[in-house]
Image 1 (spheres, rainbow, N blue to C red):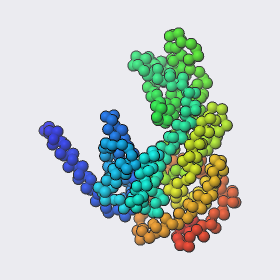
Image 2: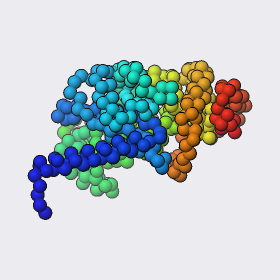
Image 3: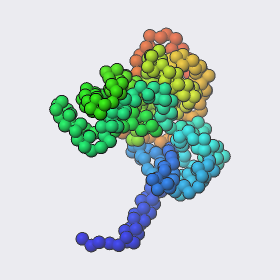
Image 4: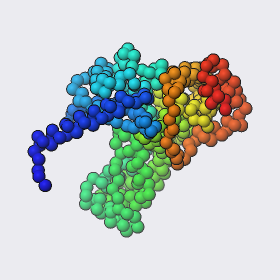
Length: 418
């Protein structure tokens, strides 16, 4: 094998990059659909900041595609103006500024302010109702973090034990032999990180099966070193850990579901919101999690007291739910959280017909056959709530209101009333 120089390798990589970029540009230019963007700032270990812009769209065979459009160094302050300039330069590279439907960002104030700059350039489509999307997984992180601050001290001894066992190789090897004697496979447990709440969930979930083994080894070593019994792991500590896992599991599952790339997630958002709220409602009066639930509900209402139109549309186009089902889910959630969604339901209905007319004018002559997909995920709590709707006679009143929502949109009316 002939070894090439670093200059040749560099030139070959640049050539490959330009070829793939040109191919992607041609592909995007031939799209008949809009493009959704996600963007975030990444901090490298070298202290260099980068801004990544990713495009999501449907190809000619109606399959979801995800492509990194730009990975640019950010050599200046993370202001709204600078973020806007970098993202806009990426869009202009591919000549797709007129195709952007939405941009999903986290809730940093600079990101929010940058949206106004895009709006001034008339970049949003479909009335701009979809344009600014806050990352749902980021909001879940904020919600859970606000609750963990209230109760994380309850698992401190488990955290200390896991950290102590894995802090040196000889100690872990001795623990491994202890596991073998107890009929368990030796394994190393990762401690959690303050900035990643799901690491707390995974730490507890992975070590619960080893609770007796960890306690026996850790307490034995504490006794040998003369530490007071108050530092030992107890059955109460593991009980709290088990309840922690049950409490956090719904938020972890929601994060995993909404982090999907190659399947639609907007239609899952309200289902996951209902699922998370149901868990909060279950633990509201709990002695262990009562304070955490209060903090989490406050954060929950801050971001989702006004339901995003994209999430609402995602369930409306589901023929099993439609507008009446959405109305029932929002009323159910609103009653429990003391939020009045009635005005939003009216606003969502009006926006629905307005956006449908926009799409009808633009795509009325285009017909595609979606690829068949099998959904094997278990149904969330929201479906049991929707089943109860059938027994609630008041839920049937929404069908009459859709007729007067718009004079046009006959096809949409037929769908909603079928």
